[in-house]
Length: 472
Image (cartoon, rainbow, N blue to C red):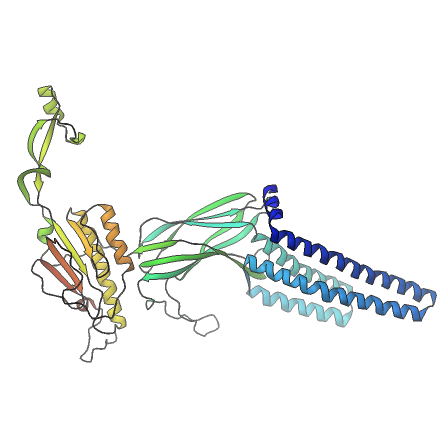
């Protein structure tokens, strides 16, 4: 704490601000002090019968008070606005706000009309409750820091575990009833057309539709965060759409202590979440790929499953290939050689370029195609086939390791439909290609070494003769 104070005192801006505040305090003290002195002298003069002097003193006291108010109040207002802008706090009324304000107005009118001291006391208590609520709720939002941890690999439509942490840096005051949210912006992936339908509010009108996963409001709720303490919650959240989401910031909301006013403080943050397309392990394979999933062994040494020969151990051999029975019989370290399997190479070509403007059904068909390609890439890699993904803008390497699978899923997560006319050969080709291929495109080219999937065949609704989607 003292180190932080020394750092602030060393800052030139803070010293200048402290100097101006000290000057304003001295001037305000002189003005208001002179006003109170003039008021005291005016009452004294009035008690002594000097009414003319008392009148002048009253005028002087009022003038000094006005000058002090005109000089001090604007500076305080600017400082309050500056402090609120630093904290970035917004206010929103609640249902309890209207009821409490109405109750306060009724009590105030009753007190002024009847002159009952008890009603004046109740009115003063209500006003003090409002002031205390504002001060306490703002103190709940000070000295906080928020962090969010999420898995490295997230799939759309599947629950992901998120760790939300809140740290209270205040030394004495705890923070209570905090609701944490996150603000996200989608930079790539599923188009914003897949937005939530407009819902009706409590008053009957329709709210404006917003894109999916635009925010994570109400992500976690913390009842209390003690002073100099850090608490964490692990929650499940499902991202409805694939894509790359940038974390813009966090929001901390509280209604403590009485729920009369909802205060929200916004924190800036940076980070990105890549949500992969959904993967269906039971998705059917396109026709012509059954050979790609079957192993064809040759009579050559390699890394297959069947035994090729047993030989003596040499430097560089893997320990898991040691044959301990043969070693015990020959009293020499022996290893097993295995047969080599033919390389099974499959290229997935994904061409998002469409020859026309896409309708809503076309967008749905495109998303189904992305999910099919992600499921096929995962299934082929798990079967041992060397798989890669080729798009007009990117191409991954052949492989079947988890890293290769995640590289393909990351490309599919951020791919977007394009309205440019597709090339005659679909997605770009790479020199030295071999093996089978599966083409995903709007216009499917003829292929002799694999299969092709047309987005038109994945439309949820059939097209009529005019090219418009029929209502479902």
